Image (cartoon, rainbow, N blue to C red; front, side, top):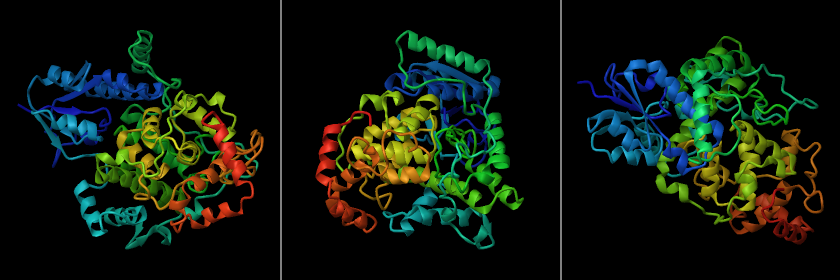
Amino acid sequence: MTVPHWLFGDQLGPHFLAPGPGGPARDAPVVMIETRSVFRRRRFHRAKAHLVLSAMRHRAAELGDRVRYVRAETYREGLREAVGGGPVTVHHPTSYAALRLVRSLDAVTVLPARGFLVAREDFRAWADGHGGERLRQEDFYRWVRRTHGLLMDGDGPAGGRWNHDHDNREPPPRGASTLGAPAPYRPREDDIDAEVRQDLDRWERDGEVRFVGRDGPRLFPASRREALAALRRFAEHRLAGFGPHEDAMLARDPVMSHSLLSSSLNLGLLHPAECVEHAEDAWRAGRAPVNSVEGFVRQVAGWREYVWQLYWHFGDDYRHRNELRHRAPLPDWFLELDADAVRARCLATALAQVRDTGWTHHIPRLMLLGSHALQRGWDPEAVTDWFHRCFVDGYDWVMVPNVVGMSQYADGGRMTTKPYTSGGAYVHRMSDLCGGCVHRPGDRTGERACPYTAGYWAFLHRHRARLERNPRTTQAVRGLDRLGDLDDLLDQERRRGDGPP
């Protein structure tokens, strides 16, 4: 008898059922388990819960009679109902918790991970060759490009440079309220979406679960067909304009030219190889410039792969790192996504985007939401959990390195060479969010002091002993000595506490 194969809810693409080395048996029966306990344990964004359940149920509908779709309280109960005590295979899960679960089940055979470009054993060999500790993303990215032949001209990088960041950090066009990019792909809801929404409404009404955020019409793909349509739409119509303004922010244009493919990749609906191949094809056909294509390839084949590998390389204890000893709890206004309580226009805008859609692009995540948490000294483990729960593309493997390592610098520099935080000048230069704000980006103290500018200097002061030894932050720390109002600034920050800025 053919051994059934168990699909987790982030293993929904055809590559997770493809037979071959490390894959399930050809035409193996499929098991899928929907557990309500996942939503009881943590308070997820309502739009995220809707997307995940919709995607799982869409995949089950595609598989038809091949799948046994079980709704149970726990995975253990669901697996028992689906296969009894019989054997089952499953691809390596994407979190330590899920891996512990499948390894604790006697009849489960764990197959190698799928959905990524680099096998874990290949990464380990590469890491060992680089000392195993200081693993620079740029070195890894170039290695991936070479070994997979991505965006290459012979032995060299396409366009003559590995890195086109210099061309991809432009502020938004002066005076523009939108980038003017073609609209992204947006799906149409169907009967499955309606069923999911009814279930979520009932669970909330019965007091079984509580969500945060709003659940409007579904904005992200929940099926392979939709995900491919979104990929084609981006590669053919939006990729060309992606690069130059990928770090810019506009209040009325939250998506700009971003791909919006992260949730599809992280649900397993798309494979990273097909995403970068579509992008490279666009460059070779003359439809997109090399800087835009390289910027996208860097996100998918560079950063995404790097984060996945570091999640496993650093180990499960990495999530508890707190080198800066930040212990403050997240305030209620942040936990509840209460953007209306926030006066700082940039932070209110980013928080509203998360509240309304469960998504905002990488710069608001890092330089607005994450930077504010870092400046205020919030507990990095709690910040990581918040990002995991509140973003439609948030998974444990995604958020632990991104938040602990990059955003909150809680590993003391193991992943990045400096903390990523700034004053209001950066926000003013890279966005239109300072216009009409009650705060002034250049003011450190006073009634209109920018919370980011004041928070930046307070952060440098609080960690001066550490940061003045870092060559990348030494100069910034020396700036503290030129502040004649430092005592006033620190007193102001103490009095402000953790109320909404």
